[in-house]
Amino acid sequence: MRFAMPPSVSNFTSAWATRAVIACLSCLIVLLLEWQRPELVTRLDEGLRDVFIRIVADPTPEDRVTIIDIDEASLGEIGPWPWPRQRVADLVEILLSNYGARAVGLDIVFPDPGEAQGDARLASLAAHAPLNLAQIFDYTPRQLAILQGTLAGGLNPQPHHGGVSAYGYIANHAGLAGARCIGNIGYLPDADGVLRHTPGLTRYQGQDYLHFASALLACSDSVRRVTPGNAEGLWRIPYTHTLSAYTVISAADILRESAPRSLIAGRYVLVGSSSLGLGDRVGTPLASLSSGVMVHAASLSGLLDLAEGRARTPWSGRVWLLLWSVLSIALAAVCIARLSAWGGMLLLLGLVTAWLGLAFAAVARQAEWSVTAPLWAYFFMLVVAIPHEWWQTQRKSRHLLTTFSHYVAQPVLDEMVRLGMKRSLEPTQREITVLIADMEGYTRNTSSLSLEDAATLTKDFLGCLTRPVLAWRGTLDKYSGDGLVAFWGAPLACPDQADRAVNAALEILVEVDAFNARRQRGGFAPVRVRIGIESGRALVGDLGTAFRSTYTAVGDCINFASRLESAARDLPTQLLIGSAANGQLTQHQTASLGLITLRGTETTIEVFAVRPGEIAARHCADQTKLLT
Image 1: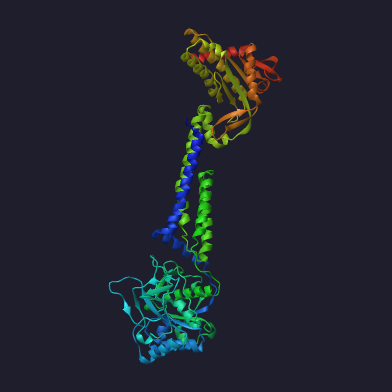
Image 2: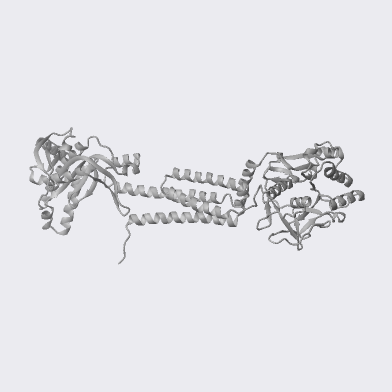
């Protein structure tokens, strides 16, 4: 024996199963995008990060780093590049001795020898002073590798630190190979050309080479700091300061010694060029084009922050990303099922805003998670979950409309749709007028009939009861075998509800008379209808359980109408009206039939019947209408 699940429970379970699938797919989107990082997603991620970086970049002056710029003014005053090595040596000596720089980093590579005396001075400074030279590694495999100059500064492979493999290099000439400090200024821009990462360590032919900013720090305090990198060995450059936060001094001012000493003493000094002619321009999150030395300045500031405990090492943040995604998607799935389409869209917009705020704070702490992964999941819910809920709502509305079309007249149904089905179905206390009609002696009338004739009798008799109820815009509550229960005053208010109920009852009498005439012509016995009408307060709405519900009314007035219908059996009338309903009549004349005690209760009420003259007049009018 198999148990058949009720349709309402099956639909409920199916709807939530679909919601669970949508939520799981949304979470899967987050997982795939976080771990796979497609190019489009990565570009959008980095674009948002760039916006965040520009917003949080600190404009406070960076008093630990100074940049000496070989700018257009310097080239115009001193001469075009390349300058004599003596002039470069002069610049370094002035910075270290006269200005008291803590360490100097030359963002310049000298692959070819210059004049002997100038090279000798630079070599001596690089060997004994805190001077950090530069060399460039090439990370692109080529048929003919770039191998220029003499590499220096190689270290044994660093444990627990992955290096980025290089395939070539441009180093300084052999005369500068004895430099004590030297760092890599080669870089790997992202697919959109923006420089966001730099190799923390470069691995070439079994040796590791430090990043330029790391080598400069080691040069000043002899403590080797390996730039932290991710699994690929790349370090996200922390652009924590705006470009304007850095002190930039023209190289010509240094050579003339006209710059204030306070802007250099005790600071790390980077020497580079912003001249367009020298071509050292890169795109960064802070600007579409800036001089390459600014990238090293940002790297140096980031490493100083790490060394001073003012910043934390980058972290993936994946656990928090997944936790947020699962909780927010589950919340969205549950709430969207209970909200309107606009409400669901506003909820998703709120989640997007909340996530961007969280991601904004995390980016400032160098979180490496995908900024847009949850946003793609929310977009998926926008285009799938919300339409699904809309479809579910439409399906329920169609079901309710189909169901209600059997209970109320079309004009009433149209008005309910205009006002909103949900509001119309909510259980509420209403003043209603109830009509209960039943066939007298149903068992006796059907006992001698065949099953087919009994079914025809029941169907046709209920039709006689139903048509007048719907014609007078009543609500059909239910059929009770050979009778029906109907009411006025819900789901729509009806000021003349009692009059409408009596009008419907009088038409029922006419319909039953016409029905009996047809039965007698066919050789069948006539049937008698009894009707009870009463008014009162009742709880009206969609009542029931998750297994089954129906639009119905519950209250004493329903019980009283039922007792009145039964009492009509012993009174000289087929239509009995209770005192509450009679008190609301304005269109009908009634006569009191006295006090009766309702069967099964100790309640005594006065009952009324429509005056015979009105019944006769209505009968004639309705018969004429039926004939025409």
